[in-house]
Length: 133
Image (cartoon, rainbow, N blue to C red; front, top):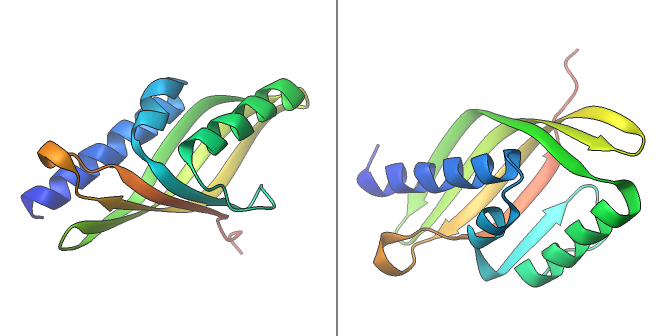
């Protein structure tokens, strides 16, 4: 693994940890302001961090949404020059007014080399993991 790939993996680890621990400012700061998001749970593409913050606030207000934990596995980093793709499987425990639920999903996060060796995320795509047979 190259030094850049290690930096991307650390950026991904920091992003996942902030998400899992409910440190929303740190979580959203892991993304470039113009990052885009495609989630299987939302009808439209989310086209910026500011928009994602509004969607998140709506989830909290309408559903009492809260992340309880998040575990990342089956991780891979691929890099092409100033772009890197991180893929992994995530198991996320959430709480809503309906109760607790564990989600099994696959996620792709695209990172772009930024200033001072930082690798902000520029795109996130989340889909349900296939059910085991």
